[in-house]
View 1: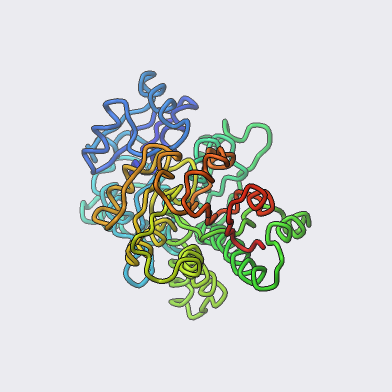
View 2 (view 1 turned 60 degrees about the horizontal axis):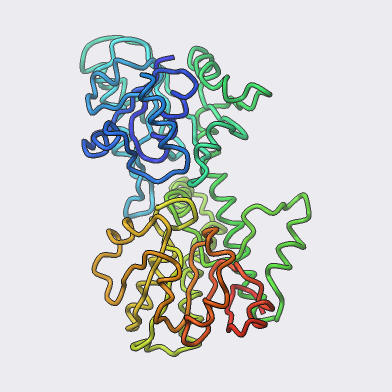
Length: 440
């Protein structure tokens, strides 16, 4: 099948690469010439495990191409995926300018039937706006052409996006046009061969499903983070509580880990957008407002623990920071808890020696100018000359460090663990002062 993907960010590039892996001829369009240059030269502009190899293999096979030529890209694909950014506006609503610009470009240049698929995370009702934008451009041209608009929300986890796309647990398609539904079923058939996981529904329900899923996951995280603060007051261990409630099949273990807050490109943005959408509809989401407030507060928990230990003024103190990305296996720093932790400690005069396996270049960009912040080229190097260690991201390489070397490197032999990687009893037995989240 001939497919066009508009946008080469996480969603667009993963979608285009994985569809080409199944033999489709995919053209990826982006208005950013720098991104297209990187892709044409054999690189990728993001860090995502396994993605580079798929891109290079399918470019070499002639199934995957990259362009800035809007007209050529629209002419190529019968199916046109819109996978551009929907950043939060000042009021928290999703900014649809890039989605609607892509829709207008399609309407402005299309010459035959197209299925226009919203892959970006968009508010309920966006499909209608896309349809209107395309029709408006056709009317301006004074021509009649058939087209269909569908919603196909993504459920990709950064760091595991390729696996999620290749082996989806469900494929949601919102459409009311039979041709569009048949084409989408044909496109996804290789990914769901062992049993049909495609759910076809109306357009608005598909759009709502994406927001509802992310809102539920964010709620579980904030729920556990709030319980963790209570556990500390009561002398309970939130890790044992997690095991106790997670073993209930009605609850399960996913997204029940207490920590220092969620970040990334999806949860913060999507929770804000859903809160705004509900408010505009006259049905405020009180629970999600609390979820957002809890998460904002949780990003300060590590700072509070440091201040409780050392005082408000931290001048003369040096902290090693392990982890900068909002989660492992990505270099994404959007709304990362590390940004709050580093900003607050630097404001109090602390020196910070940060290390992340892949996110240092991105951190240097987004944290440029932060006083007292430097970067180490290894986890061990970050410890040198530090008084204490702060763990913000749960990279695998941090799970079983050389504890003896860690203890001897830190002047105060103190660890603030924002991801509960270690057992408090073990740390105490090693002579390390240990501060976890919701743990005695």
